[in-house]
Amino acid sequence: MVGKELATIKIRKYHKHSDSLAPTTTAIAILADEIWREHYTPIIGAAQVFYMLEKFQSAEQIWADIRSNGYTYFTATQIKHNKPIGYAACQPKEDYLLLSKIYVHKDYRGEGVARSFLEEATALCREGYGFDKIRLTVNKHNDNSIVAYHKMGFKTVASVKTDIGEGYFMDDYVMELRVG
Image (cartoon, rainbow, N blue to C red; front, side):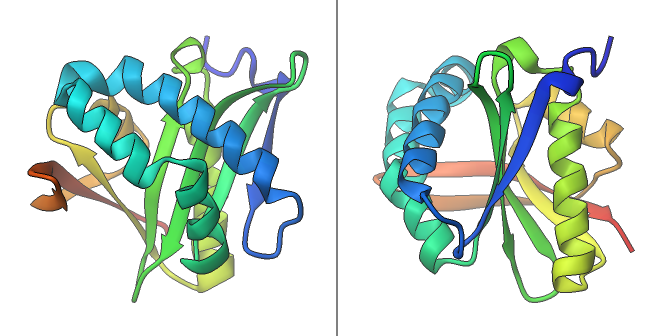
């Protein structure tokens, strides 16, 4: 049943003016490590997962993204156990909002957490920036996520291969959701 636990989940928003970011960025990085190793190792391999965790998902990088790179982060916490279960991040671009990150712990996938993150991103997109579209990239072999994004209304609009350094590439689809 989708959303059966959603009433016990709190979504929080963090931006450059948020207080007490250090504990939050550390908690997000710890959660990222668990989610990425479980979900992405079969897709891109352990070495690339390790590299991407260090480069894009470390507490220091999350801090920099929020404080200096225009990102807004959202976290989902299971209230009863005060357990972080997911996170998302958005960054404004020229005429759209990039949903840069959207990750949910395996025990909470299919419970409506990603949809809650999308609702927050949609509000930020429309009200915060006046944009009419959200874009994201998703690994071409991340089949379950692609299906989920299609169910949420995203359409595939492009295919990109991005060099991220150290001989690694992100081989992704660009997906877009019109929110205007």
